[in-house]
Length: 573
Image (cartoon, helix red, strand yellow):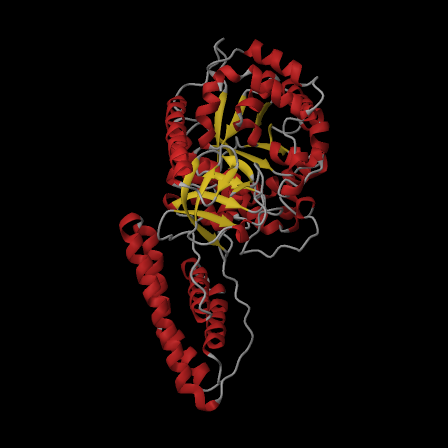
C-alpha cells in the first residue's frame, strides 16, 4: 500500500518502523493490605533489578560510541541504588502501606523538591536525573516497553504523532533512517531538525500511528512524500537503486559546501547558518559559512527540568562566538510557545498558542528569565561578534520596551563590574505583518533585521503551519510574500542597515533566488541547505535574478510563481 504526506527533508530509506509514544504515567495513591508488605517489598526489589538491567544495557551500548552519554546512565544506576532513597521507599511500603509504585512516586518527589532548592548548581542538576529514573521504574511497573530516541537498539524509521524539539534533543541520529509524523509541515520544527540532520522525513501523514506497526518494514520516499508497505522484491530493488542515485546526487552537491558564494557577475552573498545548539556537529558549519544568522536559543531550554542558569548560558554562547570568531552570531532571545513547549516552565493553556503568549511576549511576562538570558549574552559578548535579535516583535512599542530591558541589563553589569562588548547590535526578527508594513519606521531604530519567513507566511496567509488539513493554504510562493519582503529590504537599505532572511525561504533555491533579486544579500539556513544555495549563487548573475523577481511580484498566484521559478531555474538546480 502507498500512503502520502508532506516531503520536508529529502532522501530515501527502507527499514523497520519504531512507533514512538513518550510514556506519561497517570498515578493515584494506592494502599496495600498490611499482610502484603513482604510480597510488595519483593515486587519493589524485582522492579529495581529490571531497571538496573536496562540501565546497564544502555550504558554498555553507549560506552563505545558516546562515552559522555554513557556516564549519564551510570549516574542513573547510582540513583537507583541510593541508600537514603531505598530506605524511604521500603519504609513507605512497610509502615504507610503504600503500593511500590506510589512509594517510588512520593519518595522521588520528596527528593526532587529538596534538590530543587539546593544552592549548589550541580546538585540542582540532578533533579532531571531523578525524574528520569523515577519514570523508568514506573514504566517498568506498568510493563510498558521503553520508547527512547537516545538509545535505539537498531536503525529504524521513527513514526510518531509529532516530534517536539525536546524529543529530538537527544535523538541518536545514527540510528534514525527516516521520520514520519501525523502532523507538521515544511516549516515545523520536526522538519527543520530533520533537514539539519539530513534525515529523510515525511510529515502530515494522517493516522500514521495506526497505519503502521512496530518492526513493519516500510520504504520512505521523502523526495516524493510517499511511504510504501508490503513492498515486493521488485519495489525494494527499485528504491534501492533510487536511493543510490539520490546519494550520488547529494554527494555531488556537497562539493559546493566550501565554495565562496560569489555570483557570476562578482557579487558576494553572505551565507550564514541557523543553529539550535553549540554541539560539535552544528559548529562544523563555521568552516563554510559567514556566521550564525539565527541561534535558536530556546533549544537550550528544552528537554530540561530546570531552567539553564546564567553561567551555563554564558558558556554555551561563548562556545559559539569562539567558533565563528569575527563573524556575527545573531542570538534570538528565547522563542517559546506555539509548537515549542518546556518541561522546566509552565506555559498557559491557550486556544491558539501561535497567537498567544509566546516569544517576546512571554519574555515580557517573565522579566527575570528574559534578563538572565540577556545578561548571559552580554557577558559572553567579550569573546566574539554578538548581535541580539528579538522574535515576534509586532510594534515599535515592543521593540522600545525590549531595548529598555537591554539598558537595564547593561546597567546591572556595569554596577557589578562585569565586562561586555559595547558594540552589540540590537535588531528585530520580522515575522509579524504589522512590523513588515512599518519596516521603514523600525529601520530607523533597529540596527538590523532578519526576516523569519516561516511565521511571516503563517500570519500573512492566516494558516496554522502545523495543521496538515490546511497545508495547501500555507503558500511561501504567494506573490504577496515577495512584495512584503521586498518592502522590508528596501526600507533597511534606505537606512544603510543590514537585512537578512533566516526562515526556510532562505534555504530553498527557488525562493532564495527571488530574495536575492529583491536585494537581499544575506541568507541564513540549516547547514544541509548550504551546498544547494551556494550552487545557485555561483551559477547566476544579479541582473538575471532582478528580472526574475520583477516578474514574480506581478504574477497572480503561488502556483504560477512556483511553476515559473522551476522553469527559469531548472538549469541551476
